[in-house]
Amino acid sequence: GAGVSQSPSNKVTEKGKDVELRCDPISGHTALYWYRQRLGQGLEFLIYFQGNSAPDKSGLPSDRFSAERTGESVSTLTIQRTQQEDSAVYLCASSFGQASNYGYTFGSGTRLTVV
Amino acid sequence: QKEVEQNSGPLSVPEGAIASLNCTYSDRGSQSFFWYRQYSGKSPELIMFIYSNGDKEDGRFTAQLNKASQYVSLLIRDSQPSDSATYLCAFLGGSYIPTFGRGTSLIVHP
Image 1 (tube, chains in turn red, cyan):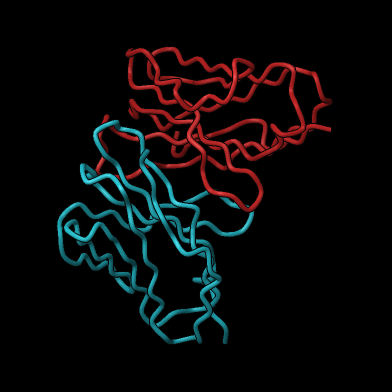
Image 2 (cartoon, chains in turn purple, yellow):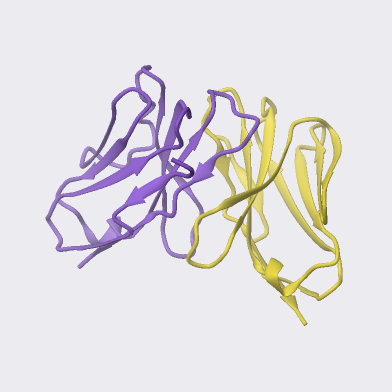
């Protein structure tokens, strides 16, 4: 597609429920990143995928968080047993290549609210 | 731990003035540097990237990089109210994972 597509754009869920967020990167972009941005805060790295290599999961805050990506296509971020502190905007970004000098294109994000 | 430091602001400048945004980073191995603009409620969008010492100009924007002093800056000439946003700097080192600063809020008042 022309840009990075994320769905849903908004998600309200009850505490304790599982949620799944989706990211469809730009076609041909081998690298994909998930970030979390709490209200008024900076971008917090979660996980990084590069092609078929093992993902870098060093930013995942707990074992309730997991993510998958098949090849260079769609990625899903799953949060199990959601907590109120999980409320944030979850941003996905993709780039061409591993060490991109062309920057990262962000999707419009998924605003997650846990009530 | 790799860190990026930015003054959170807000930085307030009058319309038509030059806005100067600064960022320091801790990782001496950093290779590439990016400036992103984020409007309230929107996702970040790339303004400029720079990887060589010196200045890089693109329209009203100039990025300046000084690797010895570990800082990167963004100058916005002829600032417009539409430039009011949060500006995030980011750097890329050997880990291939860009590290973002918390951003500087810029307000351009008429």
